[in-house]
Length: 340
Image 1 (cartoon, rainbow, N blue to C red):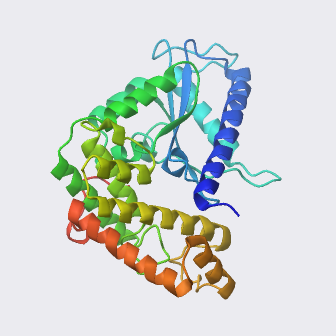
Image 2: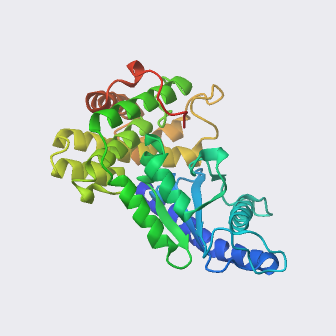
């Protein structure tokens, strides 16, 4: 009864409220055994769909935990004291467990920590200094892309502002346009090889689908934010609109990409409520007639046939823009990054 865009905002508001209530309670419980770290501050950074406030009913949540303390090797003051690094890593794990544990009401969210510095090889919680150094010296282009949708959702003390400043400085740093375009095209090519599909309803992974739209928005931010900081936004639609206003892409491309973003969001949100399983799964074998009618209604299309044709045309147009701006992912070969 409401638009998918409004629903995504509300799903994200709920997640924010849950985490902003749950995290301090978890910290309080943790402190009963381990005390607190002198000068310790803790921040939770959301990325992905939670970061951009685009959660669907089936979304997991991407998080990074960052901390700071008076001294690197300082010990907490509880009955079971821990060094700061161990303290905040255990606290982060406790928070993950609290979010993802099964209760009588089910689970809250699946938590994905793979976007943290060094991915699954990195510590659960990262020191602020290490967080800053990582994105200045070590992070791959795809990790900078992920920061486009980063948003602080919980912080104690002033660490939240410090994290936001690091994110901003990373996004507006100077970078070569051609190199960045090539690296993003290579990454898209590798993802496409892994998740190749010709199903137009596999909206995220299909050629010209949601990944293409997201990568285009993140590319436009990374290569233009230094000269045009107002392009900074976690909302891809706003990025395309501002890119056109600044003359960075033509107005027709901005309209196509903005419309694609809205169409994909509307369909993905509705399908998350109605379809179980991945659209590339052979067990998902088409739509019932009532669902076809609802999809046409949700997307503002005349009927399901018109929607299907519109989806094909949109995906074709998005891929053409992608190739024109970034290069052909199919011909780009393997990326230099170890992978996403």
